[in-house]
Length: 287
Image 1 (tube, helix red, strand yellow):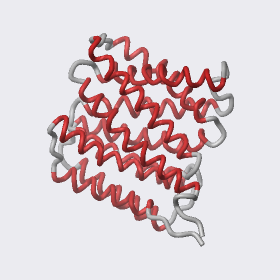
Image 2: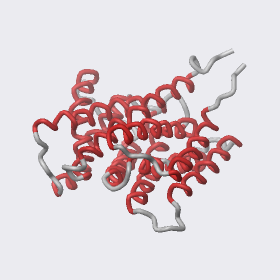
Image 3: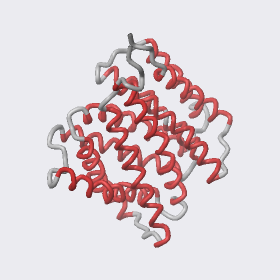
Image 4: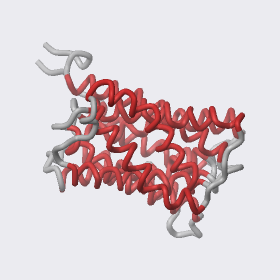
């Protein structure tokens, strides 16, 4: 009999869980910085700061061969999806409470489960179908499409869709490439892609605020490294719902740092979305 702790998928679930509980630190810091800086500049600073952490490690481990040589079109597409998701999400954080933004953003993993079946040809099971139904219902509760939808909610929802595409392409990109090389490609190319928008909205940070930009970069590298490793151990439809764990950390940070109390519909919608995630994370014992 094998247990979840020793099975590769179980280790992937653990790594993904830690990664997702780390992400709210980045989100909360970005929201705090958005009072003084453009979200577009913060998005660039996140990648630039992360590059400063990952490049020395990449050179130390691989010398000049710091970028993956295989599947570069997939790596580029994956990075474009993530850059788009992060930029839209930071724009949303500047407009709406963090818990509300995260709840709308989590429509993305629902899309990811569907895409993993349609694109990656992973099996559609009853658990996945139930997860899709609960996640879709939760998204409708949060977004309330029959009423006037806040622009911030639409931005967060769009970020979630791009993140879903990132999750699916991460599964493809992570299978045959070194994790450090994948992360280096993501950070360096992401910085280059975001440079034009940063130059258009540049606002040099004060010296005493530089450590906050370092926090964004450090925790971004940490969470993405764990995500890449997790996708080497488990399939996309299993790991995608685990991003719902970010709700817990985001709600705590939103309340403690920004004194934000989630609206009732946000809590209800988030509960349905989390329920959809738990449907897939409950694993059967293997004999």
